[in-house]
Image (cartoon, rainbow, N blue to C red; front, side):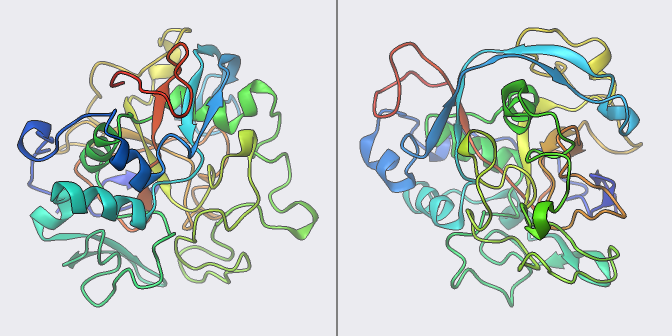
Length: 329
């Protein structure tokens, strides 16, 4: 059984199963102009336009794979204000009949407080902690137990795509205006006010839940961050479009970097990883601190856990703001 690392957290990978990919032609008619689907998920109306520009990406004082700090330019783009929720993902599934990779594999990874990660049969997006759990009262929580391929499937159906890693950090850094270690500044809990859903206490033994949550919280439970975006840091790790390369910052392009053409082998016996950003409710001061603006993580694209989700992006097509039809990203 293989164990990939997410933000220095050991998680159980969906081992032995090659990334199946998603064949849109088999299950989901991709028509981004389909108005009733846009209404169901609130796709266009729930986005904000980020103007793009130059900023400093990465850091020289973090983990080695977070540096070096380097200039990057991104074009204007639109980004979902919220992480994709259980209600939104359920609307996608209801229309398409899509089955996630965890559902097809029959198991997924679940973190058990005080114990750690475990393979749980029957864990999937409908049952985030296993078959004894369900989504009752959790419609506004971010969908979890979704792989990179599942996120790409949803994004394509919605006429969107996943954000690049550079776009995600541009948002975290408030378009280059942010100067703090965190998206909200230099203090983790400014004025004793929690700004994100994180782990309080010694990980993994005890989460005091001073921020009011011991699992993924309903989106918007904390004050908006840069550009009015919600839960961009903490709550759940979010899939990005890029393949992951810990040394990519040393040779990637300045303009609109999209990651390497494929990822290198991170650990023997595993395939390449995709990028994850933003940290989760399991990130603590004594462990991964994945809620920092420069923090990076990765996992094999067929992996799913109860602390990983996603949000969508789309290019800034000329004269195609909210409410207008655009070609597929």
